[in-house]
Image (cartoon, rainbow, N blue to C red; front, side, top):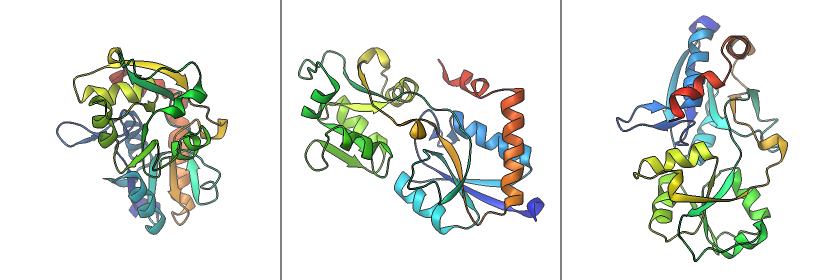
Length: 233
């Protein structure tokens, strides 16, 4: 069964973890890891890039599918079979360097400003707990490029992400971390700090077991940091 099994793997544009490069080719550190797992597990994988909310719906409807990079939220734990963790990083709030209109002495004061996130993103619940409100100071969009462009044009005060993610988001616009100022870390529960590969529960256990064996071998022989190297500059 496993030798002839074909797996569709959904993901979204979430640089540097998984994103389309300038040639429209899927790349990213977690894509590299998952693609390596497909090869090592000897499973034929087809990757599809969709906005996050649509990708989550697709994987729930497709019995021969999986999705990455996703957090292990309590509402999702029982829905999927999980493998990981993959690569992730601490999440911070950022403002444009030199944007003196954003002045905050504490995390709680950031709710006085506007923030953009992707629809369906796990950060949505967390920033709402921090005081951001949809329709007031929290803009929810389909894809990250939408809020990044507004941020660069100073029509949005804040963005969130890890240092690596934000740096890669800015690269597309000729900017880098030197063009933004890191403010405060977003409080994230331990269970949500990591990214995972999540399988639809109808994927045969023989298949997910192959991935588990491949993952354990990859971590032991190379480690996840090995896959970070091409994206660190």
